[in-house]
Length: 101
Image 1 (cartoon, rainbow, N blue to C red):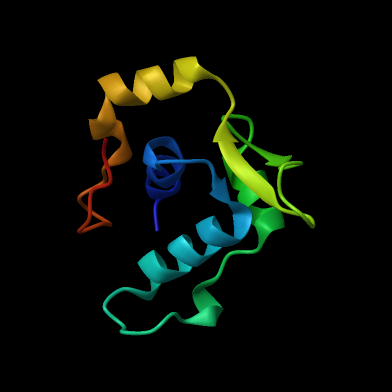
Image 2 (tube, helix red, strand yellow):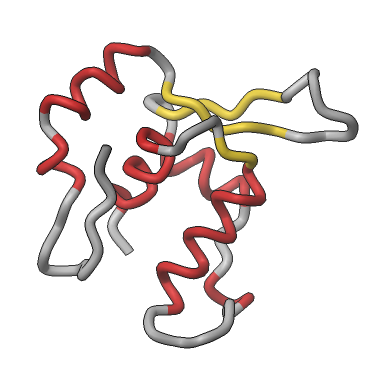
């Protein structure tokens, strides 16, 4: 799965995604046409941090109980750039789905 899909998920989500939500979404996209979530397709949070930095950051959400962490774009200029150029987040060679605003 191209990293562009992960960037699209974070950039165009209605709210900042929890790390667990993002790893589940990635697993669902990687599972393809299967009707259930394949846990082998789940990406570890550490790997996500490595792949996405420095444009996507993971911060602890102090408004939530426990160790909830949320994924955010590092700056609004990244979001504005992606809004103007959503085509760079789409790779038709590897994906059949497009995530856009």
